[in-house]
Length: 210
Image 1 (cartoon, rainbow, N blue to C red):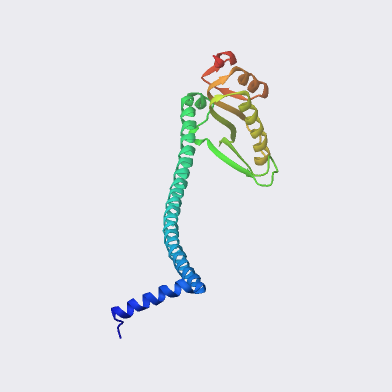
Image 2 (spheres, rainbow, N blue to C red; image 1 turned 120 degrees about the vertical axis):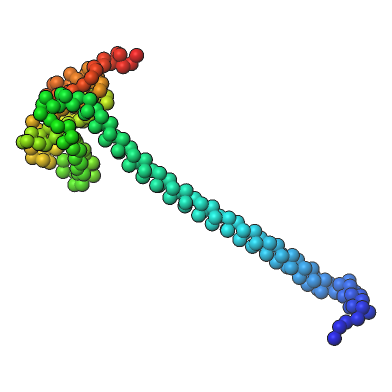
């Protein structure tokens, strides 16, 4: 059953009169209208909030993908750095191939060994120690290869030699530092410790500062 236009008009008039004379009814209608507005705004906020959440999830996914890519790059760079370091050492050894041959040393047999001092028995707990070693025909040489040698490098090589002597329970026949350039103070310190140095050029401290 449909309401006629006259019925609608009468209902509107009665409604307006009721608003004028009934304070409680007027407050109830105002409250309802206000509540409806609040509900409408809440629904709009929910919609915007859901849009923001979706956007944040999208950004989170993108960030995760970027993080994974960065981890892959870091791993690749770390691996590349290690390979480059080994290649440089091999190149430096190759420069002095004739000198090593005169010692009866085949540089292709020089190997890098690593030791992790998990219990701190020989050095600091958890420290990773590395040393180049030539072991062939009953000869054992401890070798350090660097492009530039300072006194601290000599001291650190001496320390590692002592540690690996204890680990391997074997004294080396020779301890050798191979370098392109060496500070004169480092050369003098190596000689004091009985360490042989094969080098291309000696640099004075004053010359380095210049």
